[in-house]
Amino acid sequence: MSTAVYPGSFDPFTNGHLAVLKCACRLFDTVYVGVLNNTGKHCAFTLDERRAMIESVIKSEGLNNAKADAFGGLLVDYMSSVGAEYIVRGLRGPADYEYERQVELANLHLDGGVRTVYFSADEKYAFLSSSIVREIGSLDGDINGLVPDAINKIIAERLNKR
Ligand code: ADP
Image (tube, rainbow, N blue to C red):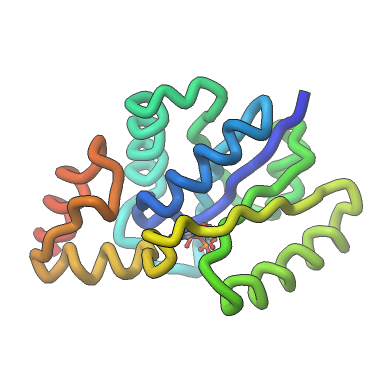
């Protein structure tokens, strides 16, 4: 049984994240989407809102081997608590890789048993980030096509109110 964790802030979850998750679900038996309880970073959506939105995307997309979860503390500790050996991350370009490689090596240093697997962004989502969605949504722009349909309305309403 291969188990992976796809960790991230997911503030909010986008179609770029979803494309990565779909690839991971084809490769691994179980994929935990781990929303990071990042105490040092102010998020637009609460931890529970982010986790609940991912749960509804997983359900509407029929990704039966994916689970939405939340964690705090070290990723390697969370991985050992769910029995995962693989970390899933997405790459939009060289800038992402530079940062990701450093984190990959830090995780390997902490636990030599974990391996990071990267999926390249779909070309149409290579520009897409949660912060772009927050920016467009808070200016009342159209976020259709940028976030999964199942959570489009809730994201638009929440961002618009801010
Ligand atoms: P973090 O704060 O941990 O970087 P994010 O939610 O921003 O969390 O991203 C989680 C992961 O998804 C990262 O590996 C990031 O590179 C990847 N990612 C973000 N947007 C995209 C996208 N449009 N296409 C592919 N991967 C993406």
